[in-house]
Image (tube, rainbow, N blue to C red; front, side, top):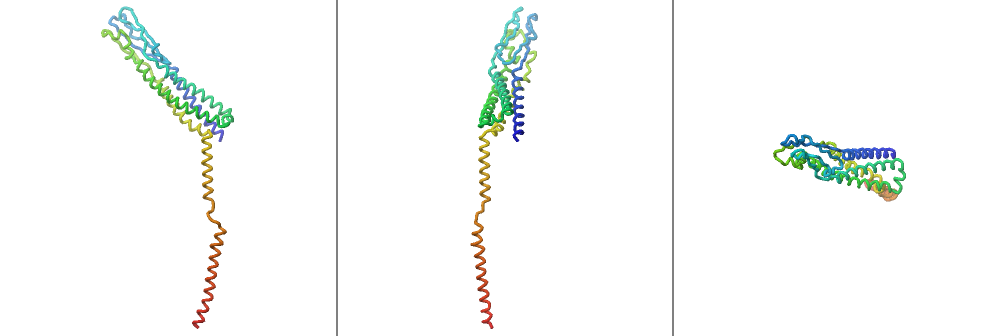
Length: 272
């Protein structure tokens, strides 16, 4: 039974580790690019493919590119707007620490199981940490989902064109060549909320290891045994019943029989 429980514990934390890796890998390893075009009235000054690269941790205000001013060969340096590093780094930090903790918890449970259950300290610590990580996954995933939405707006080619001076002149034509691909970052948000579901579900699994659950189980078992003993107890004394009921009934029958024998012959002799 203990071996089966340990294997379930290891399998659960292996899934948690895997999902945590996916979460911080898809977010922390992201890099994207968008391209815009500036078609000046003077064709020699035009640039029809301006590449803009950005990546984690999404400090967009540090991302710059050069765009033509459409006045000879002059160019201007343009910076994107926004800083979304706090939400992104918070999300990745929670993912990394969740991975490290689940790895440590699995190691302790396998190799130091006696220490883990000693004085009920290990399960209680595990329970508290699991509750905290569940809450942090929910907060960080929600914050990162909102930040990702803002990053998509800030790096939209149509929005970036508004930052270029040449695009504000009606004689020049600006357009978007292609936008960024968001599948990786969308996946990171999904894995963030999946991690929340896993850790929240793990609360019950860890709670069963604590003394609180075992104490409640013992109390419930004791109450059931007491109730069963109450039903099995006899509500009367068998010996007393025999003496008061059976014996007295036989005595009454004997007296009735005696009266019947005496009364019978007397009545018959009178008739004669």
